[in-house]
Amino acid sequence: MLFAAAALLLASTPPAESILAPLGLSPPLVRALVLGDYGATPAGFRAITLSHLADGCRGQALQHPQRLEAARGCLALAHARAVELHAQQCPTADGARRCDADALLATADPLSLAHWLLVLGAADALGPCPDAQLHLALASGLSAKSVADAFAHVPSYANLALRWPADQAALLAGLHRADVAHGTSFHVEPTARFGRYLDEHGLHRSGLPVSEVTGKGPGAKHPRGCAQSFISRYLAEVDAPRASTWWKTYVRDFFVALPLGVVGFREWPRGVEGAADTDSGPIVFGVGVAASALAISAAKAQGDAAMASRLEASADRVRAFGVGSAVAQQAFAEAIRFEGLWHPLVGHRPPR
Image 1 (cartoon, one colour):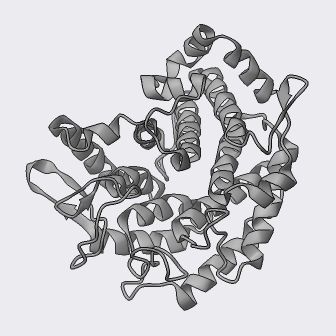
Image 2 (image 1 turned 45 degrees about the vertical axis):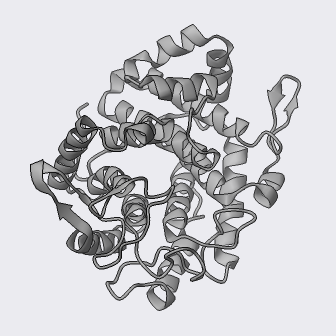
């Protein structure tokens, strides 16, 4: 099983690094997987780091089948690290961690669980599932919470009532992956309710979803670039027509071309000069670093190869300029870059 493989990998650092070597992971990503060392990455972003790592390893294996075993090792480690993020609900017994799904659903942050579902789904795609019983229990519980919620969103954090469409889109993708792997239908009703709620209550005049649906979050009434890039990527897995419509509007209203070949996406709508925060990363001339970095995968998920190429070339230029260099060295930023590099281009058939 993948989890047993993770235990072997974790037992000795040099073999783990050797197994991962074909994937070309940067040192911060190797440290995150092998040592659980995320550097300066905030605790709340560690689960997202793991899901991006897992998706990047999955994407690389699909494009280069000869790296399958290395990718499986990566996914085994990503799952093991996701377990460690929930040590309280996954205590050690007989030398191994045993997760209590009911405790996880009752006390853990749903955002973290959603990205754990994405890790599990990425592992399923390469086989086998690290923990089918836990996967099904988490998917079932999070699906039920989504359906029962008055906003058709699960709150991202256990102690905070705010609800972000971007986070729910990631959860819906995680539910869909569980369904593909296990023949269930956990994503169907939550996806339908999500779309209906936003159509009726959560769309900005531009036609894009607002960034936070209770109206109480900072900048809640506006669409945001980092959120829309996230939505465009993940919603493509569960509601491709809606994601495509929103992507076209997003490109029309938020895409910016600057001198020296630098392109990207605004963090805030034109005419709104919102502040930078931990979600947006640095904002330069209105362009959000996170929005633009995350848009690489979004463009590939939308089959927009030309946009993805322009964004990748621009990202190389921006890194050469040293913009956001401190943030760029975090495992979180490295994972976003790695996943974007290997995200499958929709409509493109990988080599066999």
